[in-house]
Length: 263
Image 1 (cartoon, rainbow, N blue to C red):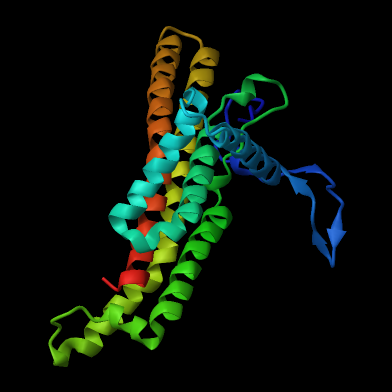
Image 2: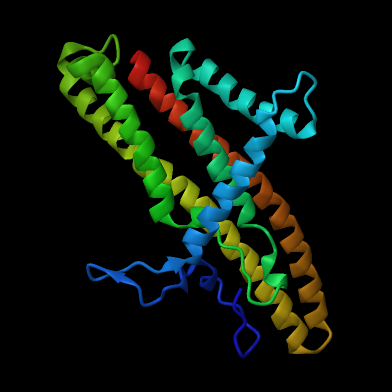
């Protein structure tokens, strides 16, 4: 959050990608500074690495840490089994990595680091460049698996069983467009959900500050109500963070099911 002279908060400043080191670093005319976005991606990867260390102990009677890791891996494995079947087992590591990265990115972005001067949590999934790359990765894997496994027969995915012959060209076109829209909707859904929630939090935070600075009897009331809304929205954002990670992983597994089983 960036407080301005009037005590207002710019809700969009939290999404700015700023250099941490190497602001003047260039390569072939392109700036390659190490940014806050890259820094938080490394933080996310570090958190995931530490978290997974607890699941590698392989104790006969698992502790809480190992149990938490096994719970998450079983959750994703069961989702893959339910949506793809035994053939989808080989994709469990990818979907698990996708789910955990998005979940950690969403949750870390909610940490109230701004209480420490000079620090501010950065939500990497609030940038379409990040969510778009994740979506393109999943969509590319679907295409590669589909054509590798079925060849040109993969196009039969766009013609549902029982389609009247005269309607095949129209249905094929509609299904093809719907299929090609998938990576856009996959990336946009996560991007919009995370961006909207963080903007809402900053807007209510601005109301708290402006209410305290306005004076009069109504100002503290507005501030108190806004603070209550911040608490409620924060709780909702934690839920949204988990749901969006699940939805992204779920849709990826469903798209993989189409590529593998042509359903």
